[in-house]
Image (cartoon, rainbow over all chains, first blue to last red; front, side, top):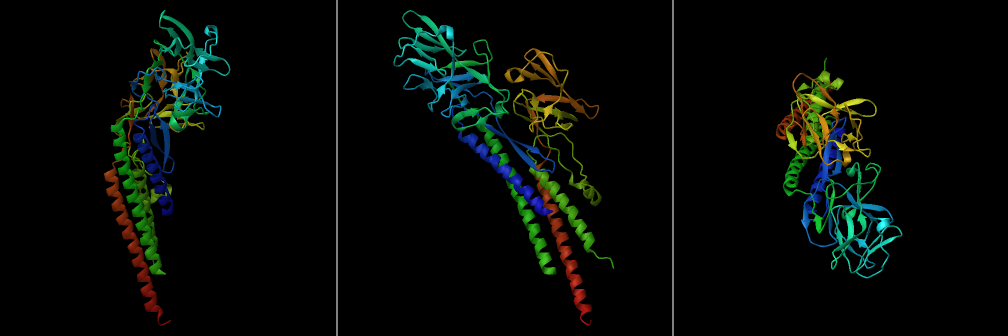
Length: 265
Length: 209
């Protein structure tokens, strides 16, 4: 019977130390762009044990201005869609993009950002160096080098002719949302994969009057709040100390029983 | 002759149960909505039936600021559909599932009544308000009302952005655990003494046989 109790306390201690590891992760990622803090909650199961549930908290991180023309931040719900090297779709809120050698919009890791191209407004394809070149499957979208790329709150990509002030719309950075973003599978470096728990990606409306906006020249900071993480850390440490005391008491009970039994036989 | 072993062992077993209840309370100090088990309610009879009373006083409300974190003030429960019947819980950490429905942390659907006919996907709404009666508003639209199982006539409030902590006080539980431990130790010593008395008797009177 107390073997069961011992195991129970051990499992609880394990859940607690995993929660502690989570808090440490959060604190060490406080400066990571687009990082979403991991939350651990405990649920009581039937026999008084606890089971651990881990969740990403997708609340908005602070936006900070960088002024870089290829830095984008999402203000509101949603993710940028990128193509991972494996061919899978990945989702991220880290919008520190740049241009690849072929002139395509890529993430810091070199994964292609997937935009929607408006067929009606695709200009003739000019393959010029230094132009903004976005690719969806086959058709390529290139903004000629003499135009300045500009992205509005809706994620629409324009080419601005600085001499004439004329703007041409070329396409759109798509933003997708999930019914249950906590169900997404987190990967390294702020990428997420769709799972059956997350639901399918749904393209959402973006724009100046919409709930979600794409902001050029901004990046999203992590949503980790140092004060509450340290509070959680202190709390979790106390619980673990208490757990260890319980374990020690169980150990002592064992010892006494063994002593009694060995003496009386 | 009646021997003392039976009684001592029974006592030891119910003390173990008390120890176990305390260690469960300690384990659940951070469990949202956990109600502490009352070890004093454990008698030998109740341990046989595995009956244990719970202390249903209100746990402290903790602010989280999350839209679907709900705390109950008052004697009531949320109703969830476990798939094999209805269940009640005070754990108000809800989330959306892949279909955009509100589910408890272990994935059971929260029961929502008076649901609107309009198709509103809560996942895509930014402005969701849940008032003290448990009515969910998405923007200006009324989405539905959270079903509550109310236990008595006292008023019940739903608080959005809060969770109810456990009502376990770590220090009290640790003190009680130490006492339970000492009392187990005493029973163990008693058991050892009984055994040695028996051994002495056997040796003394068995010598001439």
